[in-house]
Amino acid sequence: MAATSEILTAERILEATEEVLRRHGPAKATVVDVARALGVSHGSVYRHFRTKAALREAVTKRWLDRTSDALSDIVAATDRDPESRLRDWLAALFEAKRRKAGGDPELFATYMVLTAENGEAVAEHVDDLTGQLTEIVRAGVESGTFTSADPAATARAVFQATGRFHDPGYAREWEQPGVEGEFTAVVDLVVRGLRA
Amino acid sequence: MAATSEILTAERILEATEEVLRRHGPAKATVVDVARALGVSHGSVYRHFRTKAALREAVTKRWLDRTSDALSDIVAATDRDPESRLRDWLAALFEAKRRKAGGDPELFATYMVLTAENGEAVAEHVDDLTGQLTEIVRAGVESGTFTSADPAATARAVFQATGRFHDPGYAREWEQPGVEGEFTAVVDLVVRGLRA
DNA sequence: CAGCTGACAGATTTCAATATCTGTCAGCTG
DNA sequence: CAGCTGACAGATATTGAAATCTGTCAGCTG
Figure 1: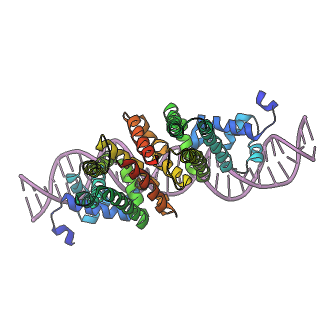
Figure 2 (figure 1 turned 90 degrees about the horizontal axis):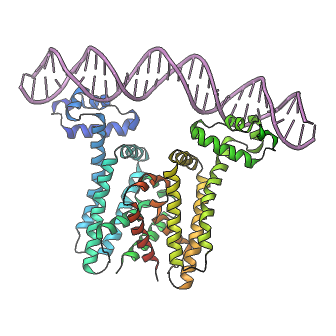
């Protein structure tokens, strides 16, 4: 067992947990399974995570953060004009979610369960994303393309108005014909509403 | 038993079913319960509704139609300007849903279950509502207040963009402080996007 | 002695036996 | 004879006993 030759770290436990969740699903994945995958006793896992809930929350955070990170490049491209950055950002978010949902539906369902039980982590993730949006909106206001008395509030409104294209609850509809057009229609409406 | 003195109609069965659902919830409400409430045998209920699913669907339709009907007055007020009719319509929809969700959470949860199992009825209801919105948008385009190449598509976009304030899935958030402001922010954004 | 193990108590889940419900229909009733 | 009843078969839900899991901790090990 090569696994036992390395030190047991939180990171390794999280990786093993993701694997166990992928294999067994959220309902049947146990701490004992995770320990077995690592070749250690389950007591050792509890040395790094106080409870099973804490372990699942950490996995959830990691997963959500991977999405936020993927979008931050668009926010950072301050040389590009805000309107197309906004459109790209929204399209990238939609595309990322849709690929996750459609590509591996079971794994996506697993993370739906995890996010449902970790409202705190999800709230942080939403704050993270609206924070990114706020930067783009603020850039737009400064360059005179957008109007907004309160960029943070406006960013939240943009995020909420496009919810149907990133909220996992709507995942079923992302595969239906015509979504692409519906997405464009909503984004156009929102961008028009933003313009100075 | 006064009830048995009247003829058994589909209407009376629907009323009794609503009552049974209110009392027992969606999981425990049985056809036998409905029959007992009416003072008849359950075989008689099957004379009017082929299956339990059909009965539940009919109850769901009735409930959804009551919401649509309440909004149609605003659509019909063609003497008022389209922008304020749109704002009123969206506010009335939000308010109606919020009252249902907050006023009797258990009953609302019951109808959440019913709508989840009757996608067909819900789709019709959404078509109904976007149809109403389309009329308002079209009136706005005709009077020159709004721009839209395709009022039906625009109406759908408006409906989807405001989903957070009428989709039952978000009901938990309707009670939190600040929703009122979030609602206004989204509606303002959408209305600005609509203006010519 | 820092990190890990594994036995343990209480909580949770599983499973199979039991009870209830759905949908049908032959026959009753007014 | 139109409308209703209630017994019935198969499907679904409930229940409680047995199995498994979570979280702890005294003691082992390198």
